[in-house]
Image 1: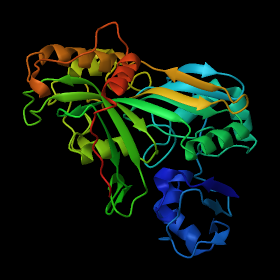
Image 2: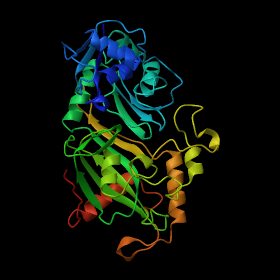
Image 3: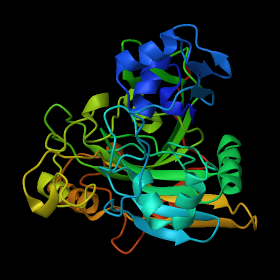
Image 4: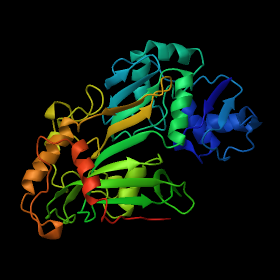
Length: 385
């Protein structure tokens, strides 16, 4: 008997496609298993291959699938361990690394790397004490996004961390460079996010979607004159109150300021945004040997979105812990070059050039200053679907 818990990104998908993704079987094999009554959803026999499954439901197959290819320990997956104890680990995921297996991605995932680096996690996974596809995973980052993730190293830690996320007690902040100049110093986007009909891998603001709230603060404004994205660039610190798939990317696009490099949601390419593609290509993107290594010309394998701050209560001690991650070198270099190149552009409010923080001031101190100095009179942008 094989069993899987439906992850958020497969919510609403057909049961036959879910089997393809999680078990690694063909669509035909999946359909046949459903037709002969060998597939259960939530403990009941799936009535049709087109049956939609929901996040958190358990899908079971009454036969062991020959094509079942679960995670496996892979020490070649590159990522940085920021913190580790017996209960949890915090890791810094590079862009280009997929968190776990899914449609079109069957190897070299972050999960594979976690199983290699944390033997206790692998042992519990092999004992069946953790999710068979996503052991230890309580939240995700997109392949194109870098930054901090917390991983539960025990079943109890996974449950506790998942509960904290559901109660919105885990604080997650991102650095995002978006197209255009935001004139307000802070804002909130409140709009439901759901899968687009006919484009199941893409998300959008939909009335039928799940509630989603994103808050942002402006850290830096960069000049003008960027081809069709001629309104400049804005560096934001973004705070998630909910964690929907592609939430930041969808919300920034919805207010007319898509993330740089995020062509999927209407953002400018790095070239169109005036960012140094050589700096991005030379960065550490994915695992060794991946696109962009050695400074060779290569397609940009990331967007300008980085999970730079994470705060949560330790599952055992209850201590509130916080970790930070600076911009990866490829993004820091591209941002510095863009700031220098655009240093004569028009700025809102009568200023000119790039409004930057001093070089010795961190994004953390700047974001605090923005919050306090503008809290009394700032305006915010709110969208409700």
